[in-house]
Image (tube, rainbow, N blue to C red; front, side, top):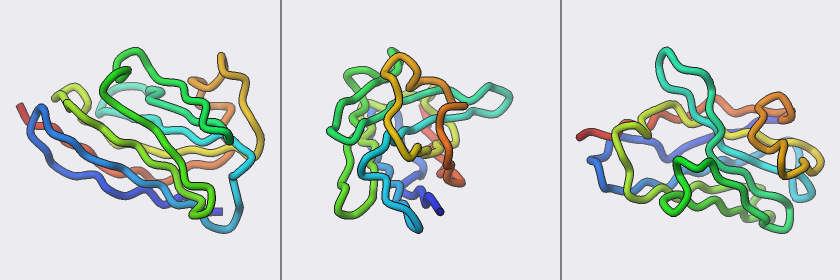
Length: 125
């Protein structure tokens, strides 16, 4: 199973980026998928998660700015990031689980079974 994240880059504050995470080797259409991020010297932080029927969960820090979506036919999850801030700078990692995750547990990294390698997002001020 591989999760391939892409779409990161350098953007000015206020700009937008769209991240993609394509899964191969396994279909996650019935499971939850999510995005986390990790900045240098900081712990891994939950960003957003989406269930098989597109029920979404967001970290408070990104609500209203980020949007998670999925295309089950392509086995891909997306993260649209708008109004980016310098504090959004981090490596963004996608994660997946075969089954569904209780909504209140979606922010916990240990409940995800598979992880991608991450894509760097840098927001300049």
